[in-house]
Length: 389
Length: 129
Ligand SMILES: [Zn+2]
Image (cartoon, rainbow over all chains, first blue to last red; front, top):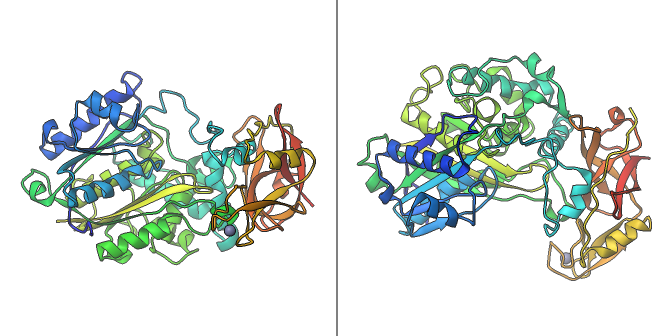
């Protein structure tokens, strides 16, 4: 069974907030769900599938379906970190294709900014029963230094420079200036990035994404329902997923889980990287983007630094416009999980709803990809290919 | 810049891994090797992650080379985290200590040193040879 054109994205919503001390976590989930339903032109009673991940409070999906007052016949709370929501779109399409539900709701929300969380630089508490904990926690791994080791190795193997990585942030900032909701709207230069304070070598402060409150939601439904709704139909063409890990100590940072996930997504969708008019790449750090570009086949392995340079990712300037909302690097990284907002901007581009300054002309094919967890050790990875119907 | 003392989180051993930490306290670095396929692996498991065969402990020479590293500057006490590819085969996460952080390089030869953790077992870390 393939999900090729078996399901559509019919509704999207991104919470405009970036700082929400006045709202509860569950409330944010409800507000984004309401927003996505309104966008789709559907009502709450239409929802018969619900998807959420580790950001949702409570036991799997159970507490949230109670709070939201949903009565789904299909639920899925697979948590693969920030890539969860890309994977949820794929799993929702599978469920729809299998007849398990008709209208699936996916929600994400979080408040790391109002909670003052040191998202990337503080070691996270891991339960002792987690098998890797005792062999890693004494060394103080953080999100930042785990991604930094991937960047360090890339520089060693391929001569990639901090200036090349900086171009990714520069491109994101060019897009963010047009997004009124973006946390950071100032355009930055390569010099700004490489002169910002070192966080975890070789990653500087401006190589890192923002920390924001907020959330988003997606409605996935079957084509027969989507075609009668008010928004332009976005078809799901194909998807792939693949966890990657330390492989019993055969650690190899030359690739991420996106390599296998991308291969599966391209195969199912029947299109190729060169066909893409727009791409959303999870941008927890600049290096995260560079690795996805290579692993998805937009350039040869090792050539990512050259590929992203000189504005090649800037809409209207380069060959591959990416994260035209400003992405996680400048706009929004709700719940420290960037996968969902990647889908949202891809759908805006395919609908022609992106900001006119960054809207890609005739945007009929787009890809969204993301990793979740730690690029240096173990992570989830998911890739989604979409088309304007 | 020389390393200053960072408070090292004590590892929580369990029945599957106790021998590893007892050996660390005695100044030895162990890995697990599969009795079926013969492959060593890390972190140590009772069943081989490659074939589910039974595994046994194997002492290493405590040496290897740096596969990648990062110096964490945004911390109360900066520290260097690394993946060290052991001569014994597997690559393990560790810290590089007792050296100038600016001199750390990929490919550098390192040997194990055991550092006290905060009220627990000694923890294998590495220093340039
Ligand atoms: Zn084996």
